[in-house]
Image 1 (cartoon, rainbow, N blue to C red):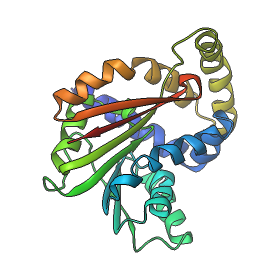
Image 2 (image 1 turned 90 degrees about the horizontal axis):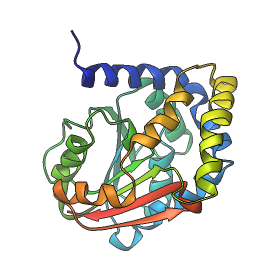
Image 3 (image 1 turned 135 degrees about the vertical axis):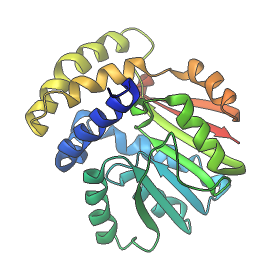
Amino acid sequence: MASPVTHKREQVEKMFNHIAPTYDRLNHTLSLGIDRRWRREAIDALKPFAPQTILDIATGTGDFAILAAKRLDPDRIIGVDISEGMMEIGREKVKAEGLDNVIYFAKDDCTDLSFESESFDAVTVAYGARNFEDLEAGLSEMCRVLKPGGHLMLVELTPPPRFPMKQLFWIYSHAVMPFIGRLISHDDSAYTYLPRSMEAFPQAERLAPLLRRCGFNKVNFKRFTFGLSTMYLATK
């Protein structure tokens, strides 16, 4: 019998393979385009450190890796994901952008990365950490592959913490979001899963102690747009 961890990984992989063709359009539609600004701000937080080797975990279709390549000008970005369907679209986008000499893709498990220790200047995770089957194992692996003094930049969707946005977002995420998701992706589960995964993810102050336990320090976080998205920046 498959363990709960293996079962979740397989479910997530199958779900993202299925919605891959409509994933980018859905993201921008559901966030009203604001996610583009969140991504820019998160990437720009790494500019003072000028990372030359970056590992982009849960890279999906490569949007974050492409933006990082343009705004940070690194030597190499490796995007990893468990969904080959998503990365196939990412490879096409990277080639169209002329960045296939900078960005590479590989199927890998974030809780058991295949890279050597102390290989990267920065590790990034954009809107994928909530899908980890074992968050602590994933964060520990990110710390392992980072060079000493390297940086983790994690940005994640988060329910707003205060009235009235908290209540308004609950209605939007549990009613409007699944409806639009089904309409565009024809997937009944993906955008019902999204609000559940957001609510289960440890938010802001709760994530900081976990990051420290996994080997990071100088942990800071910043909320975007009433707390709809939160960026975490930590140093190994």
